[in-house]
Length: 590
Image (cartoon, rainbow, N blue to C red; front, side, top):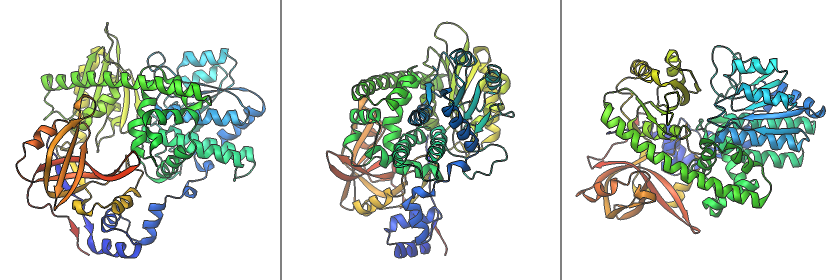
């Protein structure tokens, strides 16, 4: 599908003043002004990302009471069970609380459910098992806020229940003893974007303060919290929450911590993936390397091994677990490629994606743990809200689906509008999970399409590339790109800047690269400046670019590539088209 290019407007006079007053490159000054940052002081604050700007943990709704109850349980030597979610966010958050409570001398163990056998959120049968095991206190991580009936079951079983979560809740809140959540009704907490691991980090911080009997924690606990911030950074990036406000602080400093003080399992995983050789880590390293390995364990029913990797202090066990997670991730990729191919074929043969407002596909025998990844890839390819449903391999039964949204549509609210066709559902604005009877899939699809058609205009369904600035390749010096990197961490809510250049020549023969020849490698030239370009998942562009006879216009992201100790500027190609007149920057009048 063709994409509309739009260059973000900016005030050129403001950019010039900021460039001069803050000593910035013209490109970075323009990028900051486009983000509404126009003063040298504002630029310094945004670029510095100070750790002391994190809010006190007791400010987070529910943390104070939760910490008091947990400390009382520890002092009474009551059995505590952590109930985490099976994705990277749940695993990382669970590992933070488990390590924290062990450090404080708690009688604690952790449980991570099986995606298929236990389902999402609290499982009443597991709660009954906890009660039989003489567990006294259950603390959820990254789940529980939607489990109204299950919370009541915990109360009937005599279990004290503390729910820590960040997901969207329904009309009724669970009757837990304490709810820890950044956006509870009546809360004035100014940032609702924390992920499950971020909430767990705040609770661990509060516990360390109480154990230290001061706001300033002991040296040992400070070291623990810095390590935990690195683990929380993984959950934050992997859960695709906005990298703004406190999340930006957690990830910026967490990336440093991962380099300096990784727990044993993550050290082994980074060594296996080659990240240990890098001089510094980026959010993309988490998003494309660390996160997928942890999520592969959850997707394929081995989430407890992901938690063990994050909590073990045995180097040999860490090495074995990292190797096994690598094998699971390879298997996940194979399953994903197969389902993605079959889903695309179904879309082409059975639906009119150019005119349909959304995508809902279903396949028998698809792996339920992988359909969320496929939904994300399809949503990106077709720029449509996408639901992918995995039906049982053999018999008609309740099917499991995952969905990913596009800008402008709250996917959780969209499923609320289709509730009559669903067994259950949960999630948030950008990503959801659902269960649906096979007999209801067609009815669900129709209702979902109707809701999306009302919520999104045709223009919303046309993918637009919001370009930050027009920048010639000659401006991409190492110094300028290093300055651009100060805008990091990049991800949801704070995307890596998109630049464009006009009249670029293809130098040499573009080539496919990577597993399955899925990616592109090419050389581009503009005004005697040559730069290597890569495009992930766009191997088909190699043949198309090779047929181009004249200059092209490109949209790209500047990157610093590090290989065997050598650093160089490269670009990641996002889109291209035959050259038109130079694309003008949109400039506001002063």
